[in-house]
Image (cartoon, rainbow, N blue to C red; front, top):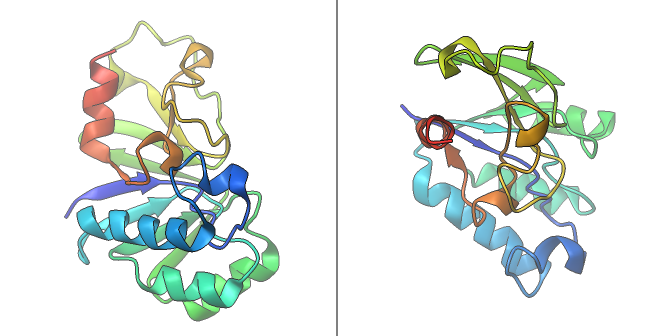
Length: 180
């Protein structure tokens, strides 16, 4: 079983400022492209953590798209995941577990704090080995650079925008940070 991280799918968000920077010509192409790319790497037995903002506008279509995704999905609540949408996710998506506004994940001796918003987790420990630090995995900013907030602390952006609409493999995140 592998663990994958992504954020800000924004299914059905029919705005050019969302789908055009991702390389799509319309929202339908973006919706299909994201599902295809996630399922290309995530297997049914894998875990997929989505760090907020699943969908906007057409929730029926958004739910149908979410049902197509492989893996057991853990959702961190984002700013577009309203109370009514969260109720809908819990009622209509049995493969999704809503985890709240943040979660702690330990993996291979590393500690991660998963949140929608970039979160400062550093405790004046930047000189410590990576395994002794807490790594924030986040989304929200729609940046194309995973290192967008690295100058503020150990913050790794996982938006679909940072990885050509593919989810990040947690092992690849660790390797990337170890190479910094």
